[in-house]
Image 1 (cartoon, rainbow, N blue to C red):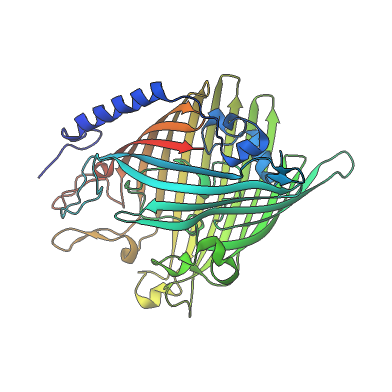
Image 2 (tube, rainbow, N blue to C red; image 1 turned 30 degrees about the horizontal axis):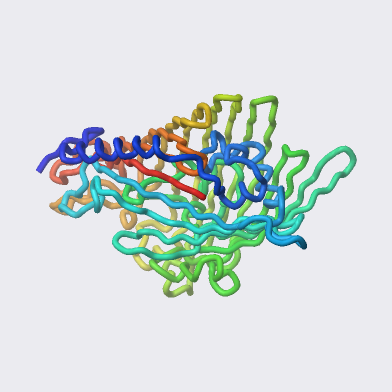
Length: 459
């Protein structure tokens, strides 16, 4: 049965959307400003907008970036000789509704399992605080709806120890860091851990190919060091290990579950950038990379490994006016793949390959109340039928490449500094190498388009 595609929603979903928007609008009129703030806001005594552009997480301001690089040490310790100063805990979560242009695939299987139905997605508890004048921590535990059940996992972890030196008339910040997701320690919204879109519906499909540097969240643990000279030049070197043994508390052992990526040995990550601020203008240009050795079977971590060499560059520009703020971002990552473990097992069709990803996006924040954003994403790579093949009902292979292009449009309304409502539309012009109507398959790229209405809260 054929249905409307593109941005046309099923007629049955329209009344639900209208009702949801009216309920959301009513909530905007009734919610008053909360006094409870996330842990770092309580620590520093500042509003969310001091660290986040327009008060909208996770985009960082220059002060937010420096607060993170300085080890989360600005402000008060949560406890001192006089007693407790604040509660170093916070909680945040998301709930929303997702509508798919075509909620079922060509075989009638659901792609979006609850089309147009309200869903709670996740609730996250966090500990974020200054430990000493030289160290701080950020640790999250998330209970998420994994469709169909709820599951608790360790989420993001970032622990820092820092010290300032003053050689001559210069400033040198030296830090040590341990985290569980390559690039989560970064302070720019161009790297894989923080790239746009910053969050999406868990039911929205994503590109079929993703570089390994973006596929290791909650599966690893690291040790690393970094330096920031005169708040302009930054260099970092870290190395990542599978999240077992000593690092198990960072991952809960998830590296052994659900076919996650199991790293072999220690895997280097590096980062460098230059940034310059002139009045309300801030510019950054950087490079980053990682070399990963991954066992082809996480349940049997032995024998030859697949190797992935990711190298990329990124840039960001910000204009931070008093009432309006503009951010433009771009990143490109090239991955060289050697399927030394997977190819002999038949899990990869070629012994070597590559993957390329491009992400361009921008955001405009107005009066710490509205944020309008949009982005373009592109991925392409070498043929690999074992990973990307799509066949028609007759068994004829239609594609074996990960080529995917699309766009994201989003509007955020900051109701209070603790509550943000968002409306996001994700569209695809090419998906998994296919760009037009597929005879006999009954599905095309735009059938993966989704509209997402969500509310994010933090207190």
